[in-house]
Image (cartoon, rainbow, N blue to C red; front, top):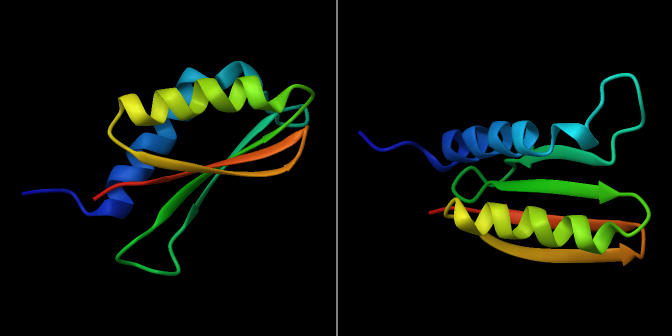
Length: 90
């Protein structure tokens, strides 16, 4: 039985949270936030929001991690400190 895309993205979000947990301290502002957008149930998207100085370099690392784990990625750059990496799976 194969997993649904939402399940794959949920697992992937957990892996990102573990791999980049230093940027997700519970009592501080989170440099990395994770959201799964599933308004389109057939094509959900994991959104990894990087909000910090030099966001681009951390977004590069997250993008590479996601691609190594089978996701297709693209980016939205809102400013030098606000980058979103969007990940989808089949």
